[in-house]
Amino acid sequence: MKKELGAANCLYPMPVTLVGALVDGKPNYITIAYVGIIDHGHVSLAMGKVHYTNDGIRENGTFSINLPSTSMVKEADYCGLVSGRKADKGALFETFFGVLETAPMIAGCPVNMECRLAQTIDMPRHDVFVGEVVASYCDEEVASENGVDFSKVDPILFAMYDKSYFRMGERFADAWSVGKALM
Amino acid sequence: MKKELGAANCLYPMPVTLVGALVDGKPNYITIAYVGIIDHGHVSLAMGKVHYTNDGIRENGTFSINLPSTSMVKEADYCGLVSGRKADKGALFETFFGVLETAPMIAGCPVNMECRLAQTIDMPRHDVFVGEVVASYCDEEVASENGVDFSKVDPILFAMYDKSYFRMGERFADAWSVGKALM
Image 1 (tube, rainbow over the protein chains, first blue to last red):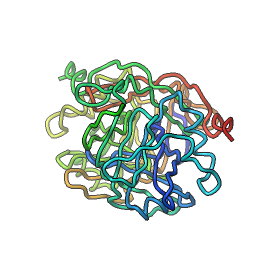
Image 2 (cartoon, rainbow over the protein chains, first blue to last red; image 1 turned 135 degrees about the vertical axis):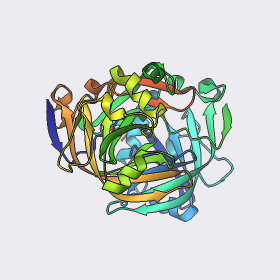
Image 3 (cartoon, rainbow over the protein chains, first blue to last red; image 1 turned 45 degrees about the vertical axis):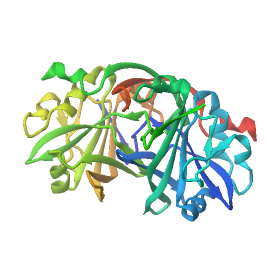
């Protein structure tokens, strides 16, 4: 039996990210879980137009996406509660820079991507920034032979309902494989 | 110590969805994990241009997003392995329709959304369909007072590296709350 929910966005859970940008030359970070994959080399961030960070992304044409682990949940949540206009959120973290030189990244996050702004989709209340992934980094401890072992990243997952942060569970099946049983 | 990964998309895990559309009047379903949230009322799907389902989405201007639970992992994976040109994937599931009448949904999936095509972003190898969520549904068993209790949905999460399907873990913190400790 189905319950009708109205026009409710139910595309969850989504990974919690800390988005980094230079604003007035200083590193700032904001929590964003309205994210997406646009194609193999592009990602999207939906950022409320009111945010301080948006100007920095437009100004530099660059930003970073950092994946905090569950041990950083207080910092990750805090960066979504407080505006960079009022608090120096850059001071919370050790920042490093990569090839773009203007996309501050958080050393304490196990996974980092630096992106070049490729396109902005103008929605009524959000700037949707589409970024080309230019370079990515991960802690040695979470690296696998061909990339990132997400079972070691311990990311934070977000669902809007009940304002929830979830852990990731165990790996339980192989993609492009387990379905062959039905062929 | 950071390891350099090159221009690697690391925005994972993402929820695995079964996207439904009528193609030549028949329900078809395809597995998509390149998804995103565009704003409160819009979602995105990045679908390789080669896919059969894309024509149905363009033709009707509608599609559905269904969240399979881990018990459906074989069916979910299968729908990404086999083209609707060669197999009748609609026959795998019980289909129902909602207000849009042309967005087939999977009764066996605990969460369903029907969407109206709002915009298409043309990427070199992908059609990125932006959909306005028109109506959503969930099984009574996973409903919460104000929406969906994702701890009961048991969704499938995808990470590209090692071609992995993960379970969701437990709820461990409150969003817009746990970070207040740092204020």
